[in-house]
Structure formats: C-alpha cells, structure tokens
Image (cartoon, rainbow, N blue to C red; front, side, top):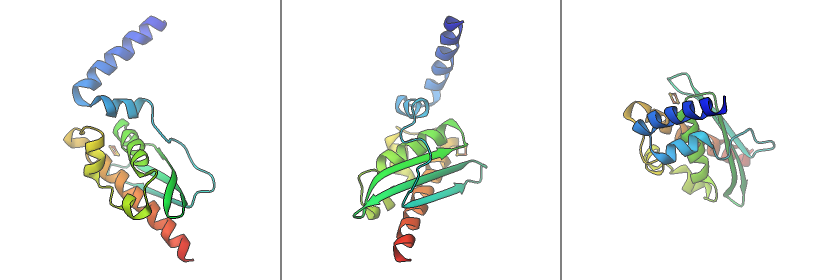
Length: 140
Ligand code: FES
C-alpha cells in the first residue's frame, strides 16, 4: 500500500515538475506560515475572480511585521503564493511590505504558468489589505 502511494506521489510530482518550479512545489507541499493567527494586528480576506479566497494575518511591532500567516481554500498555486508572500513580508517594515508586487512573488517562486499568475496577484492584494487593516487599526 505504501509503495503504491509512493508510486502515485512520484507520478504526481513528475507531472507537477513539468509545469511548476521546485520552489513552487516545495511551498505547495510544505506551506510556510499556514494557519489562522490569534490576536493579530491586521487581517484581510479576499476572494478572487476565480472564486478562491486567501486570508492573511499579521503581527506588527514597531512598524515591522514580526509574524505573518495565511490560509486559503484555493488551488496549489494559491497555497504556494500565500506561503511565499508571508515569507517575503516577515521582517519587513509595513511600508516596504506594501510594495511586494505580484512580480516579486512570481520571481521568488521561479515563475508560474501564465494561467496561474493571478494567484500571485491575489496574494499580494491580500497582503496589502492586511497592512491597510493594521494602519487603520492604529488610527482608531
Ligand atoms: Fe484562484 Fe489560484 S486559481 S487563486
């Protein structure tokens, strides 16, 4: 049974490698910073035109993002994009993290197939909205 599963997994991976970079597959299979965060300083949830939702939570100290986490109900590339955007955001100032573009995410993932590039756009939009939520909360 284990051997059958390993064979199947190897077959799926072989197919995935034809379309996706190693780093995208790695972030899809072992997402970084996955899961809801309790007591965050900022949160955002956006559903893209494809119907998938990405949520991001941030913890901020002295204007620096100390923690970032995400969840998604979307495809493998939305998982990889959410994972990568949280990795890129952590340790940055709010201003600097706000400039993380879909292209930055695509570059960090070593590219995505054209039909999946909107996942990176969704991830960067959610990050920006979560940062705006932190800034709005500060003003209140
Ligand atoms: Fe919608 Fe990936 S297909 S976020």
